[in-house]
Length: 97
Length: 116
Length: 108
Image (cartoon, rainbow over all chains, first blue to last red; front, side, top):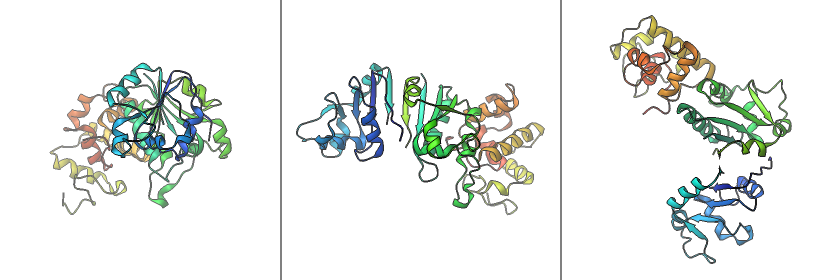
């Protein structure tokens, strides 16, 4: 698989579970200044501390709640659908994995 | 606002790529600038002489050939992936632009969406 | 829908197999919508038959149908009004039904 790196100020929206090959491609494409939102199956990444996601990584509350992950420790940073829309407006580039 | 739809999965085994076609055709229908990029095993979409009637599927090669008519701006492919899967100029469908740098290609688009 | 001289069709009147189409099929299906086929109709029907042969899909939506006709036959014929007059209702659906193509996927 081709290594993909993105320019700075990129918002990554990830919806694949951590063992999906594309999750690995996403992790390798990630640079320090990027923002990350985990949605759908990708919120399962919050259960695995060994993934070492960036501190700025956030997860969609509705998807966390849907999967019974409300009480995870440490608690992931969570955002609403409205926050997600605002994030897409604030970034130059959006990659939906 | 331009959008790049990325296909990283091979044809026929799943519906992921057809979803990509749906996405890019829908963007084109509303005159949104859009293009397709094939990477990894996804480049196998671009091999000529596909004959999938034996597996009761329509030819994605033929489906894809409608893209320019609908206003899809470009069909792009990662050169190294084409080489990996033995795709040469002789076996590649017409109208494909090869890219030597996927990151540079992505930089040209405001929205990048992987299909499937 | 149960006209015995027509090939097998689905519940919306689209042929199950585009290969079973003939010009006579077109006349019969058009007559269900009270459309009498003129040369202008046949031009679009032939365009759709060729389109399907080349791409193995129907134009997925009405907008893309209009766009594809415009690419092939120019601005005048590639317009919603022109196609709506020939194929009332949703032109892409009506025209594909008569031309024996599958139902356009993104037409409601």
